[in-house]
Image (cartoon, rainbow, N blue to C red):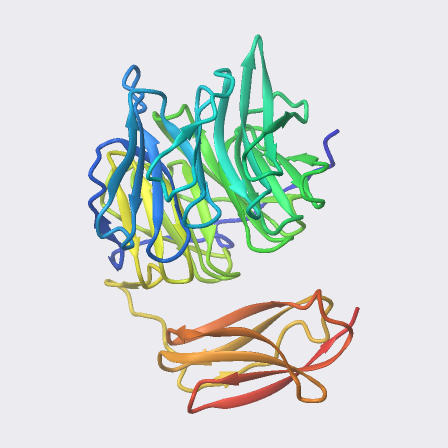
Length: 432
């Protein structure tokens, strides 16, 4: 049964997609193939895999690429004249799975040196796969057998066996992602969102929007998420892109308007503020304020971008058609060439967290006049160190870090910011 949903339209003032000229810190990598690359994954900042194929019937040729040097070079691990691949996931450097249309599922236990087929039902078309640990994994798609059925595959033994189920919607599931071992979501092409809070044992459903197609989503925490798509018939492009935002875990959605005019294919965030959207005809959007505004980086290309992934806050990759792979090592940061840059803060400053007092989640904000090694540490009232939230080099500017204190009890805590030349402490009150 569908839960009640609601829609609210932001005006163009609330979501500003600003077209500008950029000097972009994204560099093209030589993938060694001209096949479309639909998905990419990295287990660290250097070891990664990409999958895809040739979508032009009848040349439906799959390909699996691998790099062990952050994409400086890519090698073909698997290539065949069978249907293309759409999803890939690794649990460690040795164990991985790739899925695709016509019942394709391949598994490797040796870093991709060899791939073994699971020979699933050829009526099963799989579009996404994910694992929450070495044993528990899911793959989703659609099953064609007279009628259309939504399809959920699940393993609890590291992919040795897979069970299948359905929520009975008949939708084509496009993406599955988990925030942790309990909280996960599935998104269908027609905007059906399935949510679990118990590790996939049960799924609750809602409909994001009934007049748009959806291709991907991303949640930064259990409440805040974005879904993207547009009105398009696979590769041909029409004139509508869709961006929806939820602040209650997917129960209700706000449609944010834009002026790009082309479908969005994927969205990701590196933290609560910094996110990316990619899409057709070189669409590449970036937000630094939690999705309130999006900068449209005019790429000057017609490349059909399919996927964007970040391994950490700085190392990211974008895939696309014709073997496209782009890479950034600085979080994809840009400067505006034809407009004045934003004014940087003139001092180090640890601001009061908000909200305070808070229940479970609060934001800790601070400013950096120069690039600095930043450490944020939580202490209890007795001065005992409890948790390090951040310990990394960060760029100059204004930053906000979310702290989820769901594992902590009510009481008074302190957050300490250290940068080498600057130290400051603020009191935090947690009330449950």
